[in-house]
Image (cartoon, rainbow, N blue to C red; front, side, top):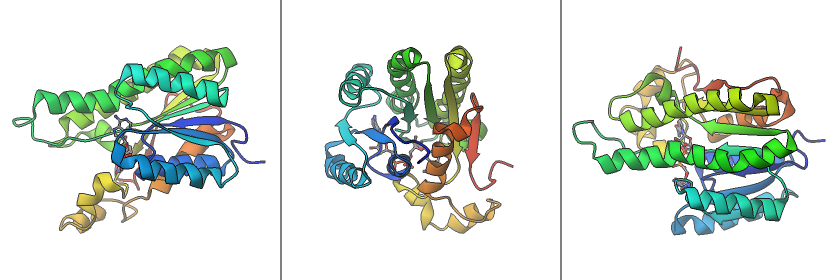
Length: 251
Ligand code: NAI
């Protein structure tokens, strides 16, 4: 018996990086996976992931759906319900950064980051709570960031969006705890993905690592493992929390 046998999980932005690792890890534990990608250039990767997940013996389907668009979130969730029959786990993973010093940050850059990183979490959560309330069970996991907790020069929009995710998470936990719906956030530190590729080999990489107690950047699977814990009954008394996965960078 696997930890998530027969569960249905949604993962947004899963064609690569942390989202892909989460989709695979949830599937390894027996969950059926519905996931999204946003750009046409990711379609091939999404199709390959769909097949890889199916080869693990569970259902998998990719949708091209923009998490920052309320109408697309609504139709995506409706279609998942039609095809999979239930939604047990939602992982709000999709995210972007548009870093710039405040002096230079345009309104458009600010709004795009809030739309994709924060508004999407509201749109998706709003859609899944109805079936979860009906089932009197559900788990929502929101991807925040260490930057949402400590801030960072040049990342005001990203930090604000990720801090917003933490406040939203706590509110959902309080509002829906009595319905047996748990809601937690994860705050990764530096995880090696395309989003952080500019840090990986740059001159500053060693300096960054020297500030991390574990002395290295994290892997996407480090985050995915915590998602499995929260999504499964292993985390059944955990709600409203922000779990740091940052090699100790926040201490
Ligand atoms: P990534 O850039 O490699 O992957 C993000 C994924 O989200 C991509 O597949 C992208 O196509 C998708 N996406 C972007 N906008 C979307 C939209 N509107 N609708 C649907 N999908 C969309 O980034 P990574 O590193 O895998 O990040 C995943 C999450 O983890 C993000 O929320 C990010 O902010 C967060 N995070 C990442 C950290 C890191 O060090 N890599 C650290 C802290 C948080």
